[in-house]
Length: 636
Ligand SMILES: [Zn+2]
Image: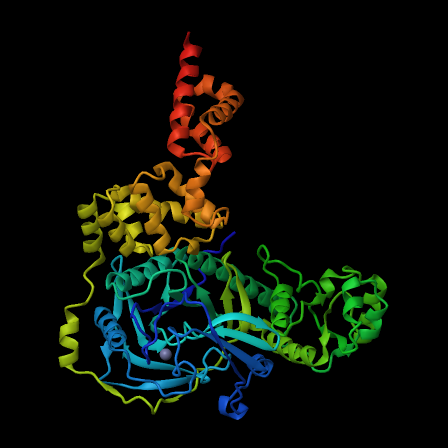
């Protein structure tokens, strides 16, 4: 199914945003811990003059108009007057600056003699001041991964934005705890290669950062933006990739999406001879026609007096909107995503009509009004509040006008499943102006020389150390190094008598497996994991129960360890034996066939039934004893 990415000249540019593990924020002394509960609310309306922003695309203008008010939630330890934009920024956090300089040295990047704090305008409300502070630290350099060099474009030190909590029509809510956390942004030169090679590159860069021990760990602490293009297509920017496996899926999805759009463009140009797409005034009001339809959704929406339905004629497009060059890749889907931005549910298009309660007669009436040539032309129907519909149509027209180019430049978001969805057209480069409240920082060898000693060593050395210090195998050593639990691993190893290999596998493979099954691992906080291993060390829970315990915590079946431990006592020895007898009886055929080799399967079945109701070790012992009895009796 997948087009060969090398044949279509796939180019991928990575931009990594990594939070730093400084105790305090970039421009004040507030705590960087995001877990504190909010106690304060600030309300703002952000209204810089439109001309100041230089907005030209309708989507950005719409978004800007849409945000009528913003609420910021704050807590004492994690925000002060700096986050509230009531006080000028303090000095640049020294630790954060050093980290950015160390990464620049590690990546052979040319550091500027003088570093200036700049303000980058943001209009989405994610910064209380309407701008983000950023410093260009260095440019150029390279990273070497698996013997292949990739160029570095730039390294910046900046403040993280506030955390989006909710977004309802005209009210946006943010948490100030994340605002101002130091972030290093590393942009790499675009590379050609397979999605796997790009993933290796991202992994390699991430490892250099982690080896420094100066970066934050955990979900959301590292985020990647990915610029993806194929031959003859424009660059598409994908935001918010958080995991490496998601990165591969996103690139694979974009390759077929972008190539699919190219195929559609070629059909229009070469097979249909369309040289230009003009919509002009081929837009008509079809509200009255649809009032006569039997679509419940449409009739419901028309109860609102302000709802209108418009139809747009697209000449020569019959069959194109619903055409799938690849599975689930359709121009109709692309257009639907664009109108959603304006709070409109989606579009209807002629390739899928009659349908959705819109009859053949309705379609004919719309066709007549638009002067459709039935076998050649297509149309789109869009409905909603007039102001939204007008803005959405403007964006649709802009999008349709570039269909012949294949892939337009736009910004998309990565979904958890690895697809991408439209967010907005690609903005021009952000407007910047100097932050006059912070003096420029001079960088000289006096500052740099001691930092050269802190450049992370080659990754192989760290892996070798983990292998020799803890007796881990190479795979496990790499997994624990790449996980967010490396420091925690060291702590647990030194405070308990549990085998390092067991701890490492429980912190990596087990948690990863549960995550793949859709469980939320953020419930397993560092404190909770330490508690689990302590209880294990004291014999209060069995080794076999650790995974089950994770699962029950993630599933909200239990709130804490006490609940788990008291749950264990709920079955008497007799009840336990009865349950196990029942399970053994059901699997007698397998036991006859496989003998003692059926133990693993039986333990799985038994744990599935008795999970949390009894101790795993006890179950294991009873099961083994009974199985041995059956196997022995079968032999007689
Ligand atoms: Zn602060």
